Image 1 (cartoon, each protein chain N blue to C red):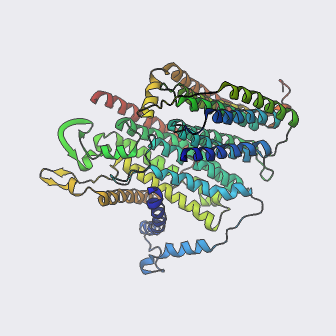
Image 2: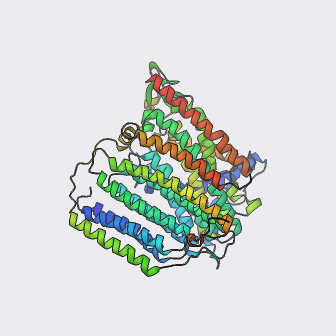
Image 3: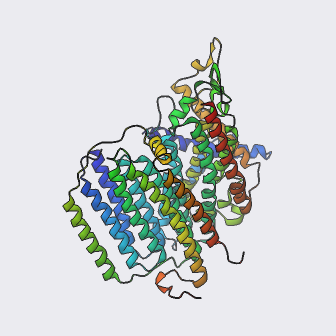
Length: 103
Length: 345
Length: 164
């Protein structure tokens, strides 16, 4: 189905998504943006896995990417619960301001 | 393409008839006349309402989050309408040919939550905000029993393709999950009769479907006595109309799914009785559409009947119904269907 | 031909929201545009013969994770009107790092010269995936199931009010 487009195209696409994720994590001063960046990086990996798995009769990449999605869901749930707790306690959402371990 | 050619006009027509029907049913249940002025027996009332609504100004309050506010109703409708693409209409017209038909439908319909959140947030109004929060909590909670009850059918039929599921309910030899050796057709071959435990599954599915489409007794997201109009408080005219349209489209989708998954889809209810080939006589393209629409109309009627018979639930009752009763029950049903399937195969 | 055009369209749908997220300071709009990016990705998955993965992407990412994020956001701010505006920091350094990473990885990718065969898998992928889950990937499947349970319990414990 995808003969017309070279694999390099998809590798570049996933590279772009990955690097955008890193840039978002570094630049933005908000914990939610950090989560967004992590999700983008996971998706970049998934894109590669799914793309190369269409030529694999065993579909190993596809299966791995399904697990990645599930792990991402669990990660977001936990991360948001922690963020909510931090917000309740300190009233901040910027991870940089979280400098003290006690109180 | 079939979706566009058939379902879009069908939804629009259904909304016009459905609104009228809903008012008439409500008034019948409450011992009054309902709309009587426009046309004979008020039959043109909903057309008049539609004209009024289209002429209304599309008000955009100045403090809303513009892009989110404007795009929200379109997302809600697009998500629900995309669900119609996989529905089979008759034996020839089978909807989109994808392996993951039913799974795709449930996934794409769950996206309407995004639109609701956008509307609730974008409106910048505390009633919209609470309405959206309630809607999302409710829809996400009821997706679990909905998915699990559907999974029972999928385990029994061993396919996700809705056309295959419909086909399997035509002529078979199973009744009450046991092989009879005779040819069974008509209503006896429907999933609920092939596998009677699916009646419970259907009940769970129907309750969860009511909650998904925000119908009374689960209309907390738009309960007018508490939070005005919920997430569509700030909308008017055409955009409000799209919200209304998607609510009715969701009702329709749930009814279509119930008919296809549990009650034979486009299959006729009449069985072959000896030499009297009623099943063969009432099977065909036109008959298929007729039976399917008849079943769907029946479910719509039941939804309206429930709406005017039951009071609204409280938030805590809503949550405990989903998590403490429906979810465990549907897991048990799933287990029983699996065991039964293992024994008879 | 149609597949290539669709690929470019879905690529645009994937990339445009990401660029918007890079620019914007509005958190809630960023989260919603992330949803559109996931929709584009799921379109790309369909074109890659991975229908199941596309639906998983829709259901879990666009329908689940995004909703969770917005819900979490709404719980953190009780005052409306202000919106969620964040600030940028170390703009130069951050973009430099990611740009350099992109350049170096891209150089690596062009040099490696990927070649793929065209053995597309036959049969019903959904059934095949189901069988793989319970045969080759059974341990991962069970571990993920356990992890989900732990995450569910953990998240609900963390999110409950302290002292209850």
